[in-house]
Image 1: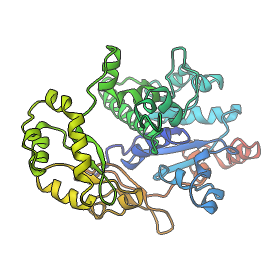
Image 2: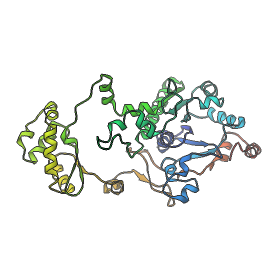
Image 3: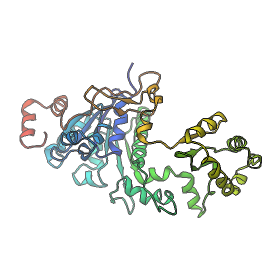
Image 4: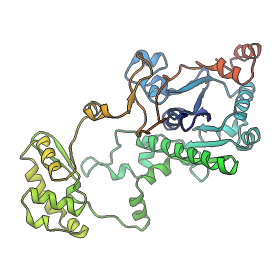
Length: 386
C-alpha cells in the first residue's frame, strides 16, 4: 500500500526551521521532497547543533531533525541557467515551498506568474514572518522575534522576571504544521477542481492562532479571568509540581483529597475564579509537605492531572516513548530524531532515509529532468550546480 503523499513531488526551497519542518512532514508521509540550496550557501541549520564535527560536515543536528527522507540538489538560482533548471523541475512538481523574504523570488524573475506559466497546477506555498501583503510584509523575523511581536512574551514570565521567551521554537513548528496542513488541503482540493493554488502562510498569524481565546478577548479590550488555582505550578518538598485541575469536578476531587469541604463545594467557574487567591495560598502551604512524585501519585488516584516539572532529558527517556513510533534513525550512524506526533494504522509516517548532504542527489535529479551528461557537466563548470 502507498503512503498518503506517494507520487507527490515537492520542491523545497526552505531553510532554518519552519519551512524544512513543513516539508519534512510531507516527506515522512511519502512525498518526493527535493531540497534545493545554493551551492556555496546551504541551509544555515546544517552548521548548528551540539556536535562540532557534525556541524563542520554540514550535518548539524538542527538540520538532521527535519531533513530525513529528502533528496538534495545544490542549485544557484542567482544564475539564469539555475532558474531554468528550477522552472524545468516546476513542470513536473506538485508543490513548491519557500520561506524567502517576501518578494525575493520575484526579484529573481520567479514570480507567481512565471511559476504558474510553467505549471498551472502548481501549489506554491510561502512561509514568511508576516505574510505576502501589508505594511510588515517585507519585515524579516525568526521565532524569537515573533514571540516578542505577537504578545507571547508579554503573557509569559512573572512580575519579577518580566517578559520571558519560551525555550522552544514553537512558533516555527506551528507555522510548519500550518503550512503542511494547508498543502494537504490544497492537494485534496486540486484533485477535485484541477486548479493550482497559492498559499500565504504567516508565522505571525500562527503565533496569534495559538492564543485564540486571548486574541478574541484583547479585541474587546478585555482580559480573561486570572486563572484557576488548580492550574498553577507549586513548590513541593523536592521540586515543582504542575497541577491540572481544570474543571469544577476536578477541583472538587482535589479539595476533597485535601480535606477542604468549603473549596470542594465550589461548582462554577465564577466561584473558582473569585476564590482563586485563597485557594492558591492553601495549596502553597499544603503541597510543600510532600515530594512532587508523592503528590502526583495521590492526585492521579483521584483523577486530577498533575506532573512533576521534569527536564527535557527526563522527558525523552520516559518509557512511554517505547510504545510510540516517535523516535527513529534511518541508519546506525544517524542520530535518533523525532518523526511525527501521530501514527496511522497502516502506511503512516516513517523515516526511511537520513538527511542528505549538500547536493547529494544533484546529478540524479537532473538526469530525471532530462539533462544529459554534457549538460550536467556544463552546469557544474559554471557552478550553477554542485
